[in-house]
Amino acid sequence: MELNEKITLRQFNLLIILFTIGTSILLSPASLAAYAGNDAWLSAILSVVIGLVILVFFWSVSRQFPTSNLVDISEQVLGKWLGKFAALLFACFSLISAATVLWVIGNFLVTQIMPETPMMFLHFLLMGSVVYGVLLGIEVICRTVEIFFPYIVTLLLIIYIFSVPSIKIEHIQPMLDGGFKPILEGAIFDASVSLLPLIALFMVFPKLVTDKKRVLPKVMGSYLIAGTFIIAITFITITVLGVEITANQTYPTYVVAKSLNVEGLIQRAEVVIAVSWLLTIFFKLSLYFYASVTALAQALNLTTYRTITVPMGMLTVALSLIVYPSTTYANEWNESTWLWFALTFGIVYPLLLSLIGRVRGIKGEK
Image 1 (tube, rainbow, N blue to C red):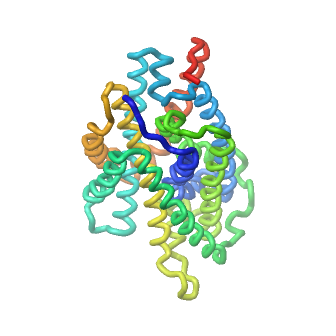
Image 2 (cartoon, rainbow, N blue to C red; image 1 turned 90 degrees about the horizontal axis):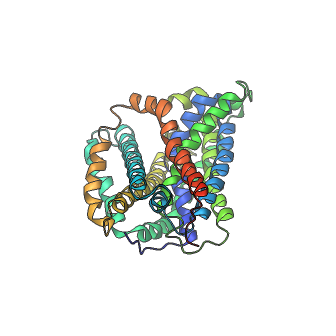
Image 3 (cartoon, rainbow, N blue to C red; image 1 turned 90 degrees about the vertical axis):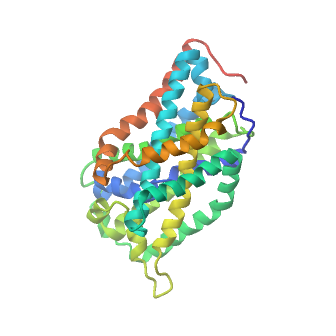
């Protein structure tokens, strides 16, 4: 399958920022508080450090196969049929991840904003826009990212700035009260949510990116920007709400935004965080879905991925309605299964491809 679409490195870096922020801007503070308590913000910092190490690993794999996407690499290293099987597994990973993200969006809207609206309707509405974007192509998605990126950053900064007066430092004291182990556990889990899913971008980079000069420092800079947003929102949420409230809320960032009221100047600020989060998660969902349809189409030797985009969109909606039977199940699955699921495809899969490729002396075209 030939992909004639091309994007710039700048567009790719913006994708990394929004993809990394994605669900983390609303969900990470709660999970980090549950793991690390008062030191949740330290856990977020450690998560970014771990993420930088993993980014270097991803970069080394891309350097090893500089003109190939993940499906190309699988077939080159593992052979035609085993490579296609691995590509199908990756397509399933991306599809399941897309379905879980879609469920998160629908659950947020139903529980926080539109409780009388059927979740199925919201899923169809949201997935329809994603399918339309993927049909137009990755170039159009990236141009949309360029348009919305300044507005997303501005909306997030509004929340950060107007939350400062409500900060209470005593909520994060004493530091290191529970030792280093909870901080490390929280950091590893947070990295599995914000960084390991970047493996989906291997369907875009390096094959579709035109400019590859100074890739590593630029990509690491983009990830640091996204990580700074996550660290900041974790610190603000913990210091404003306290550890117990943060850990027990599904969307603590939204709760912080609802509490903002600056002398009548800023009210109903939760709408700001809702809009910014919906925009970031839309792009994360779009990239998951794009990775699944392109990987499947390439593994099946289709001439274009667009022929299966609509059916795959319908499958994603159906899967999103059954992937999490309840919020309790979602929390249990995230705590017990997601980390190993993400590690398998985010670390083990590319590591095996890299090692086997080096042992067999296989290198991509320069």
